[in-house]
Image 1 (cartoon, rainbow, N blue to C red):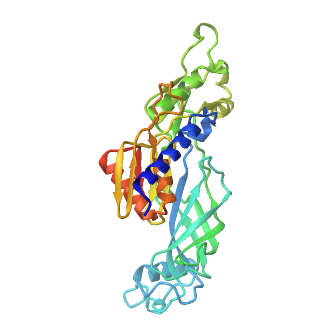
Image 2: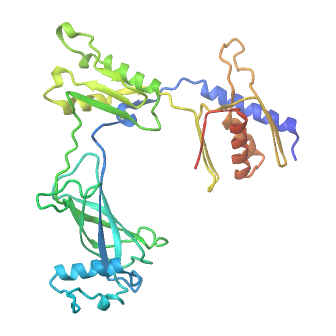
Image 3: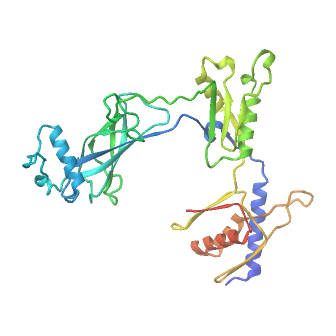
Length: 366
């Protein structure tokens, strides 16, 4: 085992090298469209229950919901089942239908919307069948995300799309889920309005949402000469940060007749080096550790199994500098990798630092 002093010296060298790299000015700029989305531009999920036929004996067992659905389809296609003395259809003839499966069908309409007649992909998931390999989805009506809303004049749920076609397994190891390429045909128009009361609303992505970023974006928009009001209203504020997630932007009069151009201009503006929360993301199953460049640790002595490391603040490269660089977590992890520590040991040490209060960043465990 390497000595503690040697390991500490290695950790210090790595930390100093990282500090020198981090001291370089960041020139990265991101467009507003890379950080935000427009309120109103959201995806819509359609769903419905359908029947898959043509399976190789891997369909549903003899259960009432599937046989009932199959009987209903046969009736609609002009081949009703015989009825008993009470006038009720008997399902006995369908009890051995092993090549049929009841499935959940979903399709996602893009955030930009879609038009009647457009075709999109749909996903098919078995409810109790073992495999959907080789199956064919019968014509299936798809309803809105909250059926039966809205109702048509006939009182029946409104059908937004229909799905049909041969199934393709994306992953042979998961044969109970399949996809139909362009298998969903839209029967309604989907318009996603983005202007409300002369305003648009920018919504920050959850991974970038914070007070500093929304304020910087609002100031950037307000400082654009092209967006300013004319006449007596020069300098009027058009963008207001409402919270750490949303920014309301009034459309200037010069863009009132062309809001699309205004949105395009706003989303193309670039934000200089937006500040994000310092985070560490750990996937314990795969042993993956992703560390943000701003994640630091306090002065600690780590002893874990046969590992012993000391880490703490160090003197900056420029002694006259007023900036004191804290030890970066990445330097500690690099040191652990250098001495061939197991991934699970590294994860355990990071979790211990967080519990000890010496991890200066948010730990996300997946």
